[in-house]
Image (cartoon, rainbow, N blue to C red; front, side):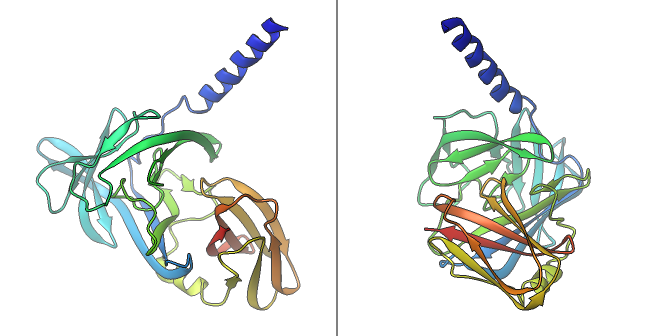
Length: 280
C-alpha cells in the first residue's frame, strides 16, 4: 500500500510539474493589450487603455520592442532569461518590470519610483491555467497583484506593483499577438477597435452588481442566437449557456465562490460585451 501511495504521489507531482515546464516569454513580434477601467462600485466605465508592441528600437547596444500606450510612445521593452526589462520614455535607465524566476515567499522591492503605498510585495502563490491548449503560470502577490507568464499584469501592464484600489481598477480585457495567440481562451480578439468595443456595450445591461447569488442580463429587446460564458479571474471557463427568444436572462451564481468573475456575451459567435461581476 505504501509503495502504491508513493508511486501515485510521484505521478501527481510529475503531472503538475509538466503543466508548467515550458516557459512562455513576452511576445517577440507585434502584440496588443486592451484594459478596461471599472469604478469603485465594480461597474464598467467604457474607458479603455490600449498597449501595443510595434517594431524594434536600439538603445545602448540592446534591441528593444517599442511599447505604445493609446498610440503614444511609452517606452521600450526587452526580455532575457525570464526577466522583462523596461525603459520608460521619461527615463535614461532600464528597470526590471517582471521577473518570472521568482518563487513563493520571494520579496520584490519597488525600484522604479511608483508611488504605491506598499513598496514591496511578496509572492504568495503560484498556479497554472490552460490557455490555447498550453499551461501558463500565474503569480499571485500579497497586495492582490496577479501576473500572467508571457502576458503581464492582470490590472496594469506597466506597473507590476499595482494592487487592488477602492477607487477603481483596470482589468485586462484581451491580449493578441501577431503569432495568433489570443487571451482569454482565443475567444476575444484585440483586433477589435476600442470604438467598436464602446458601441457594443451601449445596449446590454447586467445587474445587480455586486451580487450574492444571481445576475440578470437585459438585452433591451428579444434576442436570438446569443451565447454567454462565465470565466474566473485566471481565465478558466466555468459555464457556457445559450440564449434564445428572451429579452432578459437570469444566471444563478449559487454554486460559485465569492470573488471576481467575468461574463463574455457573444452574438452569432461574435464578441459583444464583457462584464466584470463581483460575488459577495
